[in-house]
Length: 253
Image 1 (spheres, rainbow, N blue to C red):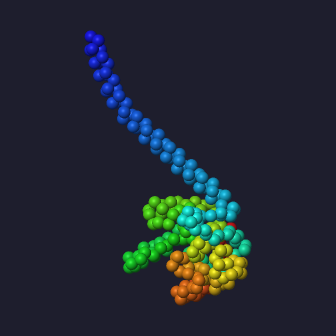
Image 2: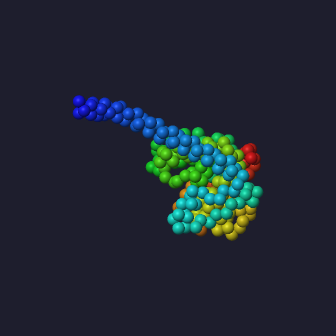
Image 3: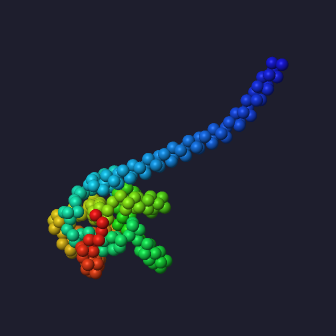
């Protein structure tokens, strides 16, 4: 009888343990999802707080600059406010990179459509990134072309457009864009390539800076290649067609 009791006792416990195992697995996944959601919400909140602060606080660095630090390089960088940058510079960058910048909400739908049509006939894909997207990528993200990075870039672009004025977005871009090897921002670039402060840059110098932005690792200003000089001339013509610095007067501040 004692053996029988032991048998039935063990026999009863095994099915109960088996019945509890799926519930434990389900509870584990529920807790995991909960913590993932909480972590994601915390990350989103932290980014939004940071963006609100950076609307007024000078940007101290970017992920691109930090990457160079980790690689043993020391990027030249110094924040300079909008009021101390020649008016020729922002309009040159807009003319070269994103002519509908004052009007869109982070994404240039027409440029994206044009790029999709053109890429069917091109061996190298043509991009359609706006200045807002480039700020999101350069400030927070890495440089590969994965769909994960593209998704994060899109979300950050919307957040930046929500939290910052157009002038602030352009001001940050002027300060964190890479203009050459270890050279970030208009302040470092104007002093390295032209020996002047950013407030004293001429229209031609501003156009030359804008001409290297698509690929500062391939295009150089020391000295500028024939392509860069020709591209700067085209940018100057585009600036005139837009109406010069007055074109940016419609941006919100």
